[in-house]
Image 1 (cartoon, one colour):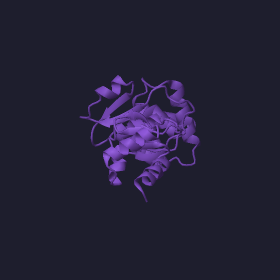
Image 2 (cartoon, rainbow, N blue to C red; image 1 turned 30 degrees about the vertical axis):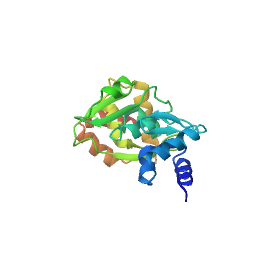
Image 3 (cartoon, rainbow, N blue to C red; image 1 turned 135 degrees about the vertical axis):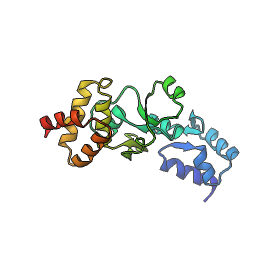
Image 4 (cartoon, rainbow, N blue to C red; image 1 turned 120 degrees about the vertical axis):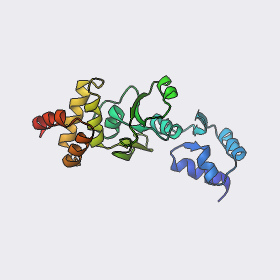
Length: 197
């Protein structure tokens, strides 16, 4: 397979997004990669990330490609998980304490910071509406997050998410209760569950 064919295949697999790092893993030199990008009209989306002219921009995938330590959370996670029907106006992410968030906040990303021990709890991968895989928190962790941040989450979004979760065949109530205890929202969660279940 030629370098050109390798990049075309990679672009097809990544639904029109090429990253310099992925090309280098394939053994393709930076100059050849940049020549390919220019020749085929790819648009620079961020440092080392390029979008094909016939592809749709996937803001979530690009954000996570640029900042691999962010995990989509709160309203963004609810949207990805199908627990709300409203696409959030801004992306919401969680990072572990110590992560520099200045650039993200300047871009309008809502950032939550958690202790390093709590950061990995409930991380899963899910497909964005544009077909790329991103890391997000599972439904149980996301419910706990919106209860912890309930003063910052619209009541309509909170109620919709809880109702959709209660209807879901994939719900895991024991896991939800375990997470609720860990995140100290077990009392408020029980009130909601008594109404919904």
